[in-house]
Length: 193
Image 1: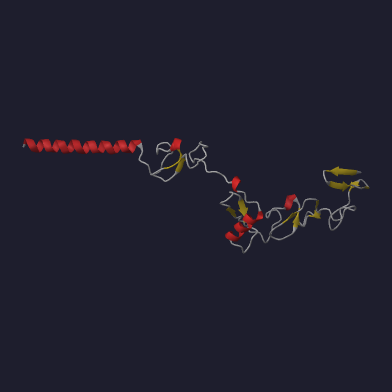
Image 2 (image 1 turned 180 degrees about the vertical axis):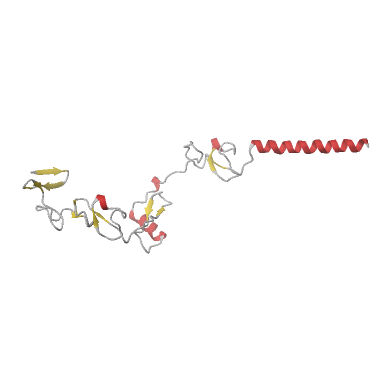
């Protein structure tokens, strides 16, 4: 039986009710170089899209491709990512041992994957607001230095951390009124005496 799948030609041969014969090195009888066997000690499954571990450089199937599933001895379990300031693309630095971030970013810029048109534009940080911040509609709060859209430019509109709220300003004015009334009362009593 012969099947065609887009540009891939796959042939299956029937031998005693088995479809295809797995070779020790991977592949089938017809195509011995097609696919690789999973190198997990309990699996050995033939996988036509194998994964190569960047830690131990062994071949695994989709089930055993993660560090945890094959107990990779050379895995750095903390994944590190840097963000390109030009295109906002996240670049994983886990596999680049010994290279600094500047070299990785330079390699990214030269690869052709860095497209400045894909840079994520900043949006207003107020919850529920999706306004894209540009030069003409951005306001910086004088109290908390937060960049917000014009709709949320007042401290009461964006829950300003260091801003003077309406209740505290009222309390301050009330304190001033109490001080002045006491001062006036004291002056009146001293004038009568």
